[in-house]
Length: 62
Image (cartoon, rainbow, N blue to C red):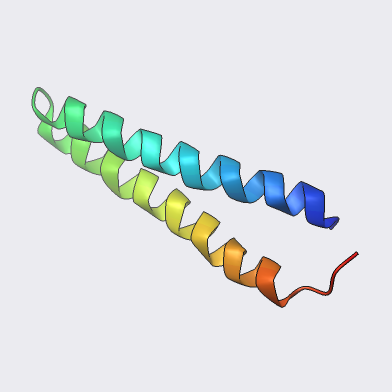
């Protein structure tokens, strides 16, 4: 995988996951289980993005 593609994927996962966590917090007030599942799912997606940052740091440069 090219590093530029991986960089794009990393930031989409990190910011997308954090955005879903924020939406989950807002939804939790009216629909508790749905909001909680959104927060957990968003947190997992953001964690994958952070793990890919580590993977990217270990890759050889272009």
